[in-house]
Amino acid sequence: MTYAVQVEWNWLVAVYLFLGGMGAMVMAVSIFAHTYKIGGSDNRRLAWWGNWIGIIMLAVGSAMLFYHLLNHLAVWRVLVGVFYKPDSWIAWGTWFIILAMIGAFWYTLPLTKKMPIFENWGIYQWFKGLCEKHHKAIGWFTAINGILTAVYTGLLLQSFPAVSLWHNPGIPVLFTVSATSTAIATLLIVQYTILKNEQDKALRHLFEKTDAWLIGTEIIIIFTFLNYLLIGSEGGRVSYELLWGNPLWVWGFVVVGLIIPFILEIGMLLKRIPSGAITVISAATMVLIGGYLLRHFILAAGVYEYPW
Image (tube, rainbow, N blue to C red):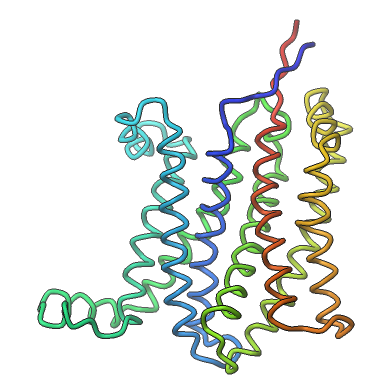
């Protein structure tokens, strides 16, 4: 057997997977926080910021994938792929992203302050009123497409049977948990840097607790998943060695991206470490770094097996 590391899916695709999953879950989490007034506060501004940040993340991530395409004019084939190739995850994922972005825009309209330039536009006022009337339904529409987008980023990789590292049930679970964790980390940064609202203290505490659980879950999945690789196919073993032989994976992702923020968040929850803006933002930033590095190295360690 000979092995070759894939190079076609590079850092541009890693950015797409990272921003796509994270941005979609930022939308979903912020919508649920606002719709159900989680933490006892209205969370109106959090929902507005969360949806626009999600839209920007999805747009930038999709632009990275578009730039990566060899034939940019063939992008229309991806859009119609659900009709002639319904098992194409990238086609379904593209529609999930588009629908999530449209829904997020609709959801933000009733949350947007009056803009004099549009106030005299009858069609704008009519559509804004329509969105407000069906606000909860639009929120669920956006959140569902956001969650499907986060899951899709893992299913996309799982659909490649030639790469043992990708073709296993752990990838969609891992990417979905990571997307939710990085989304909550993003919203914590927004709360501590932009909103600075004392009334959402309960929500911030809930976010910190939830993120600690998600990071702990991600640590368990990572080590279980990598043990599965070690005892599986030869290609999986080669990927395992590539990952653990790379100091940036060990120290950048595992230590800085997972273990240190986990210790910080558990310490804050147990009141062993002072909880404040600097500590929370530091932990959240490390979570974001880890979220990107996870996808970067999962792609970089993808190995093809050749029977000769």
